[in-house]
Image 1 (cartoon, rainbow, N blue to C red):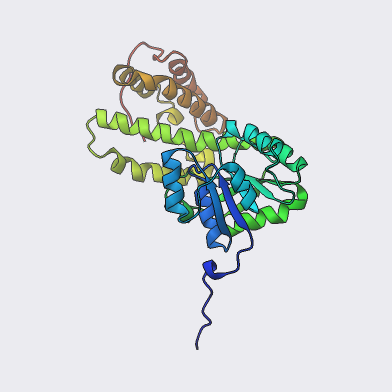
Image 2: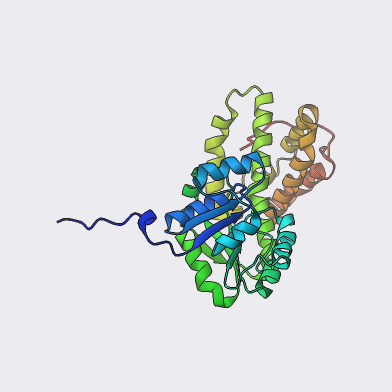
Length: 314
């Protein structure tokens, strides 16, 4: 039985012209993803050499123009600039008359909801906040990573269907976030993803100092399993010396960190305290073992003045 060939999305009539203001790591990837869904990127703005290279790689043949020209040419404009620059950009575009009635304005900031686009809304634009919960590299791999990626979406109720449709066209999953909850939502993502990078990088540095030749290979399976367990089981996945109440082992860790990497001590103690609190609250850390452990974590030395002994540090 013969099958009917499916049309290439690039051959479908374009429904929206797409512009990008701020060719950082996010904007070109989202525009390229929308292009695969049948939309047509027509303009991109970027200043730095890196921005120009990203635009050329992800959006070849799309002209590099000024933000005002992007606004003039596009039905849907992606405002993909740093969080702190977003309010001023929106106000400036509205004050200069660059915003057109009926134009879709999409920002990708996790911190802000749709309210930051109010100046453009008063000029007749349609405001959408679509934040991909993903880390970006500025390379074509980002387009592939959008498949199944959750987007934090905030928009007026009358634009709900439009926001969902755009996210789905990019291969993502819309997750609605209330306007007032956007800062908390973004803090949660930063706590998990951004701090994870810091923790892993510090761990690899310490392993190198300890003589491990391939810390990435050592950590890969361990961290992969820990992440999978945490996502499946939450606090029940806690293990290691803090969750067991091994105060001597934790004290030995602190001693070694002070000797070889003093810049990591504050972070270790802060995370260990948070781990101890969660382990106690969920019944994993026995109260009779918690006192000595919390004493170590309070000042970084064991209650009996010794360094303790090494134990299972998984």
